[in-house]
Length: 115
Length: 112
Image (tube, rainbow over all chains, first blue to last red; front, side):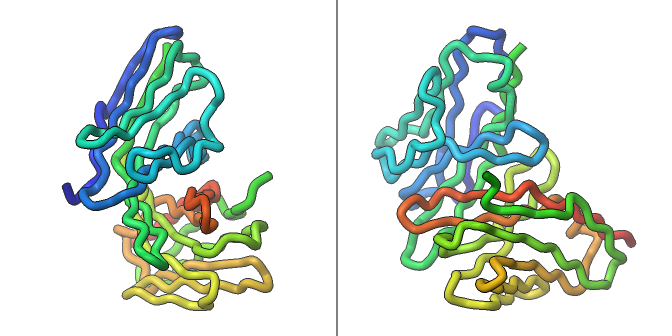
């Protein structure tokens, strides 16, 4: 597609439950990025993929968070045993990474609320 | 350790005038800088970028200036329009990682 698609738009989980978020990048884009926006304007990088391979996972919490990008499937971000502090908007972005271009295009986000 | 700083949380300008949004960075390894605009309940929208080897890039009403020696960049919007009212984020990226490092944003309000 021409836009990054994210589902669901909203997700509510009780503390300790699992949450799974999905992202379909723009067709032809080979890089996918996940960001977490916790406080009102603070973006935190989580993980990136080059096709189905992890490219940079330096922002991923060591426990409870995992992500995948498999061929012919939306990418996913999974949080096991959610905690209150996981409440945030999770954005996915994709890029083509043509030589000299770093533009990432963002999806509308998934708002996760942990109660 | 905040690598990208936007020191003005908000800015208010009159329609038709110039808006200038500022951004400072500390990481001299950044090789691209980008500006994004964000409306509430939407994802950030790419506006304009600049390579670290340039000092200016222009696209319509938007111009980004980069001063590498001062580690400072600015976004100029001329003329400002009410539809430009949004939160503007500055971001830097470094080859090899490609992740965006964002500032905390500046909320621009353009008054009719």
